[in-house]
Length: 220
Image 1 (tube, rainbow, N blue to C red):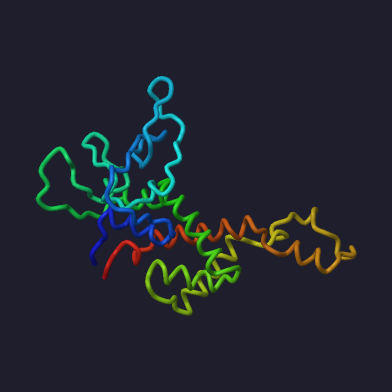
Image 2 (cartoon, rainbow, N blue to C red):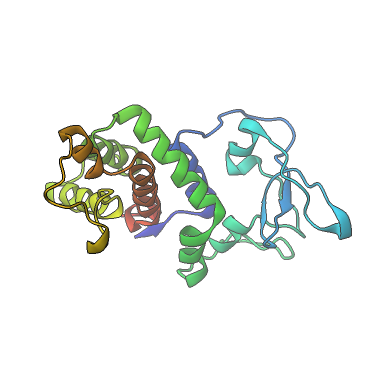
């Protein structure tokens, strides 16, 4: 197994979510320190007491390939640093390859990974419509360049169902609608259907899982 370099991991996530900017050349994409102390892509605007200021919209510039992100010795990009980007204080004749906890934490909890999962989910909704299996098929094609197996499809559908339960599930018995109540069929169907926000949130979690899969990070 060969783990992708940090730059390739970031670029792959941008490509799969559909926002990768292919623009070449020009000035570097700036970096800044965010409120959590991480170094991320963005315009460095300071507020009072030298604290990070408001985010400045960068448009597609924020999604350019990592090779165009500014490389500052004092501010290495946190995402690629977690994946063994060369330390700029010393000469680097060969890049180290490690498998350490910060890499998993970066993909699980990092703002960039969560943001790209949200964008990826919106892409699936746009390209695959409302069909759950079609969304899963499209996600696997984009992320893994293959179709999911039947078992993978069933497992993913089960996850999406659990993550977005019908609106009526989990209602306390005391709040349940009496069986004798006259409920229009359409109203009953709506009560037992997952809400759009819940369905979208479940898809975002699924996309986040895809980005954390070994098959996405490693080349066999």
